[in-house]
Image (cartoon, rainbow, N blue to C red; front, top):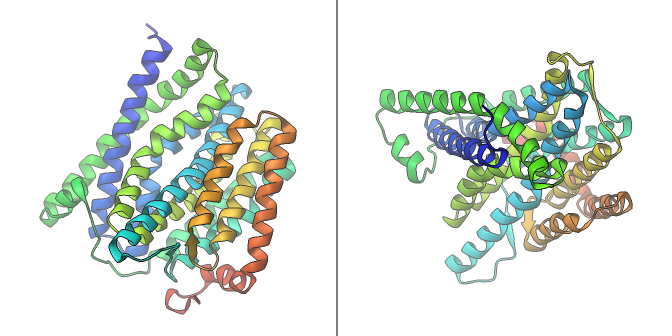
Length: 375
């Protein structure tokens, strides 16, 4: 029995969103027991696990059905661009608005902490390395393993911090206030239930996206690229926005920066492994359209990092990222996408030039003890 593709999309999509909320609440509450920096990284990682499950399913299936390779690339590029094009600007603009109301003074930027230079350093290195993908037209297993190792080092660097008292809200706050044993049992139970739902729904949700595109006459590539990431990342965006609305803008943007590190290392690095496990070769091959999408994502990443190297996220930086993200939907040609890549690249180069004195400390931050990270 095969349900209507649209009904299946709604049902499985709702299950994925619900599981995403469970994961986000559990991960937030787990901060009570995990070191500060690592807690944020783990929170960011767990919150986007549904996205990983769907994308890895596409990559795995592409191992024995090459037509699915485009969906793996679409889902990965969409989630990355959605995070930086919508998530980052939304949190910053909300934070600035709240700060202005609280202080009664004009506020033009969200100040980041010196410790954020570590995340930016990891993201900058991964961002530069990622240009190998559009240059070669593939995500090779060796490159994937390198990204996974970089992510592992990222977690190691963050694991040395002390456990800090987290600022929890809503459901997570209620869980965090439980006695130790009850809290840990609840968190584990929520993680297990959410993981079970995701495992059960990843395949039918991924397939329903493709089938719904056929049913509606909509480009399947675009549906997979934007709808799946939106469903799985919505809870994280909501939680980050709530943090920003409570005047915790730095914590909110830190969570989303960490999510970007996760996606640009762990997610991208896992795709060729899933492809190989599915019966494919050592590289996930990309066609011309997928290469364009990868180049767009890589240049957007460089622009986003370059703009905030000085650890200040200005209002106009947020508007620029948001505007360029929206503009892409009006672009349907290769020439248009290449032009947009050029705009991202030019802005990135200008920002790198302006912030050049921060470039060295940022590149060194992943290898520097936290207390010695330069601001």
